[in-house]
Length: 277
Image 1 (tube, rainbow, N blue to C red):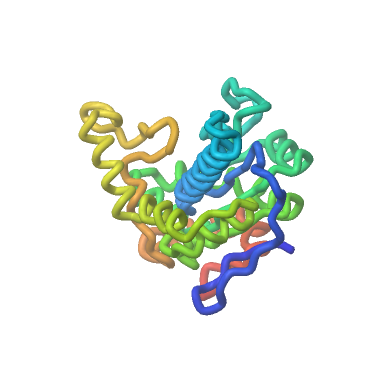
Image 2 (tube, rainbow, N blue to C red):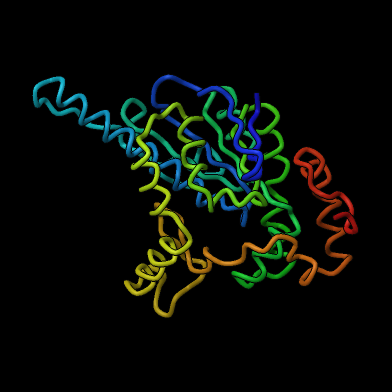
């Protein structure tokens, strides 16, 4: 059963956990401006806590013998060729992609990677890029539209967990529990709360500001630069307006976006005509 995030009133519906053990590769896919980076960091934090708990438990059972926990390796890649060097036995890969290639989709589906997907109304995603990062319409359109087709294929063939931006999943602690359950990871309520509090808008804003002050984004700050592990960058915490495209995109631009995203909008239940509510 595929999962679609629901509104707070409807609750959360989950498929069965994909595995009884810690998976060794998880694909986090989603268009720009769909909170995909937030979810990517959630997955990594869940797996780090799981690895640490397993290592501590093993040490107690073995009377102090220490076992190395899984090395959770976070990175961005649109193709398998972009994967960094890693230990295929010990490392757990948390892969973020916003425009996955056919080869990455095939690898994730055929190797049965757990897949988590974030989705957002394409017009709002494009408008958000323009407002937060100063993209031109053409650049924002290209950045968002290039991932639509692959996301649909992952949805159809990969049995993913799907989170809808419009449900504001990134503001709900229950999302952390839902992702952990999907991955087959058991965490205590205090740990779930700790992960959530570390990734609220306020907490992420503080992290980004600390990075900015340390010069991580250059001097003067460059909005294109990002932290290589978390992928946070200036402007990441910003526009979350639903329907904001109406004030920024012309009717012609909206029509172009929806014409390109017909399959995506049909699959995920978004409007297919500019005048639709």
